[in-house]
Structure formats: C-alpha cells, structure tokens
Length: 134
View: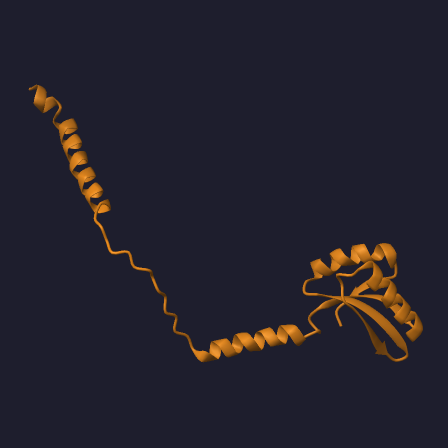
C-alpha cells in the first residue's frame, strides 16, 4: 500500500532521471567543428544603387542645413570667414555670392537638431546668425 501511495512521485522521479540522461547524452556527443561560411548572392544592381545613393549624399547640398553668419561686402565676408575659422575649427565655412551681397555660410548639417545645436554656440559670437536650408 505504501508503494501505491507514492506511485505518482516515483513515476515523476524515474521519468526525470530518464530525461536528464537523454539531455546529458546529447550534450556529450562530439561533432566536427567546422568554421561556418556564409555565401550571399545578390543582384549586382544593388551595389550600383548603394554607390549611387552614397554619391548623392556627398554631392547634394540642398538637403543640408547651413548657418548664415554674415551678409554684406566681399571684404566683410572674408573678414567674417577668417574670424569664424579661428574660433570654430571643426565647422566648414564658405562664401556665397547672391547679387548684390556676399554671404558667409557655415556648416553642413544633415538634421535640423544638429544644426540648432551649433546655432546656439555660434549665436554667442554672431548674434545675427540664423539657420537656413539652401
């Protein structure tokens, strides 16, 4: 009678031992260690598209934000550019001519957030600076 009372527990213990032996046996099986190789086959046009997109991003100035710090004569623009380059060495600056004035524009920011961050720094020295997307 005592064995029948513990029949469920005994069944559980026996099945646990059997299954643990099986799982342990699978982890001890030795397999050959081969280095995996992945072979990716893709259309050649995909690489052309990626190269084309990269080229567009390098040359497309219309999608970049700039900060304009000066508007006036050529001499003033050159002076403003030199002063800016002395203070901010990490930002690119250039002079653009739009009849009849020369404009000094700095930076080439991809996002509005990035441009706004630099605008705050630039406004400390150039209070009339503003953000534009040429």
